[in-house]
Image (cartoon, rainbow, N blue to C red; front, side, top):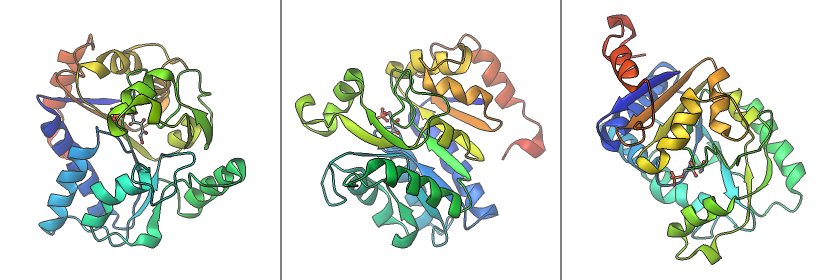
Length: 261
Ligand code: F6R
């Protein structure tokens, strides 16, 4: 794991945007796995800025979102389809046919989930999976106790996650109970993972994921056995890390040829 600690969420998101931009430069038809939520907003804003400056091109890029609320169609204002359109896709030159978000209206969720996995494989697999993390360590909506080998499927949100997401709904009672989410096994098949976390509320989950035992009780800890993971943190999210100074030191002393990798 490469732990990149920056003073602010803006600075950490700029580093993350650089990582994405570099990949798209090397592989213009890359496949990205994308999250929603508060965390990636600054990254999306920065990628939009780079696109407007002509520094990134999404024309040949394919995307797969991690999750969607069950019962929400693509036009629902709170759906993740709408979220992605509003905060990212409508601002860049991505081709609509290359965009994939789980279908919250799927009649047969297990069959849809199998199809979603097939679509990821048919696209060549995910090159870079971008992730946020829940205060309980969830990635995608794989809540604690999710199998570390899980695949795309329906999950029930933990009470804390529904509370945390109430801000997007104007009240906890309006937050759905069920989601379709890529599994941890699905996420682990991405060639590279890039996890972002900002704010003190995430520090406990981040510390467990990076320095704790690998356990289904902190699903992000599964990333410890992924060969290529970068974790971009602001100072507050890194506050629980015992070896924070060491991670800073390693980052500052990367060999010159590796600086931009
Ligand atoms: C959303 C997702 C979730 C979020 C997590 C953090 O697509 O996959 O794992 O990344 O719930 O949410 P925020 O960023 O709102 O704190």
